Amino acid sequence: MARHFPHRKAAFILPLVFCLAACSHSPAESSKDSVSQSSPSVMTISCQAEASSEQSADPEKPTSVDVQQKMDTIRQIPAESVIDTTGLSDQQVRSLFESRAVTAEMLAGYDDSTFSLDQNFITPEQIRLVRLLYFGFDNQSHTGELLVNEKISQDVEEVFYELYRNAYPIEHISIPVGYNQDDNAIMTDNITRALAFTTDENGQYQEHEHSLGLAIDLNQLYNPQVIVEDGQTTILPPTAAPYADRTNLQPHMMDENDLAVQLFEQHGFTWGGIWQGRNDYQHFEKGFDHETGHIDPNLHYGS
Image (cartoon, rainbow, N blue to C red; front, top):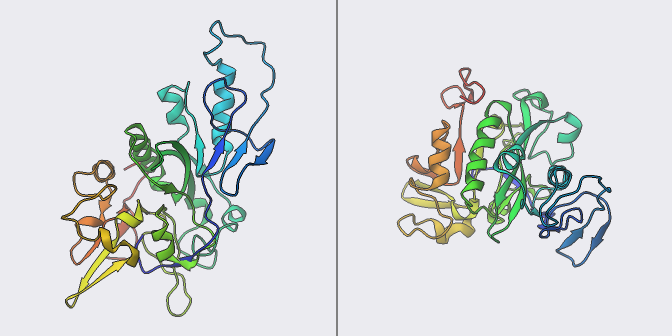
């Protein structure tokens, strides 16, 4: 985001390693049953598959029941979980990129820097929870979640599916909780996120790209906001100073040739890396009218 957002620090969800007992292939995902914690940072969850009359001629080949159980498990496990998509077709993997309606009660489970009802510019009915998969820095598949405006949810599904198909590395995709409105901490932890609320000096929630769910910040630490004003340069987050020089591209730093930049632009998003005087290299937005400070009335689903 690299806005001037206050946010919070703390309970970041560490990747969870899941084993799906129903499948005979590699360690993967699971349901909420049979939980056992093996270390402070790695949790193994197993599930017992119900016996099926369906048999496969090849014992190594998953049955349709195995595949359905695997997909159901992936849909249920928390964001940031390590998963295994072995045995799933491209179509089945694509179906795991989906948008879900949310409720006020669900949104209340997040900090008010993610959402608050004390404003009049966006309602829960306009928000979608996009469940997706991403390829982590650890070279494994993970589940991820983003809260976005309903009008761009289809675009978000499609962009992140293509990124996943191309094994594009993203460190974290989740909804930050527990950061005490410390946006620099969220960026330092390199969390890719979308919907975000901020308040002004009077404590009033501000309407902008992120609070309308129209913007996504990708791999934030490696793609900071660089503001040049009156000869002074400000880098947000400050810990991203090693990545501010875009003439010295390092891994995970985006430029105009980056796959993510190209995919987002194909879907009508603007990349903040091309802005003058305030290069926001992590930032992609669509449908925000900077003239009025509101959502573009001409923005339509998937347009």
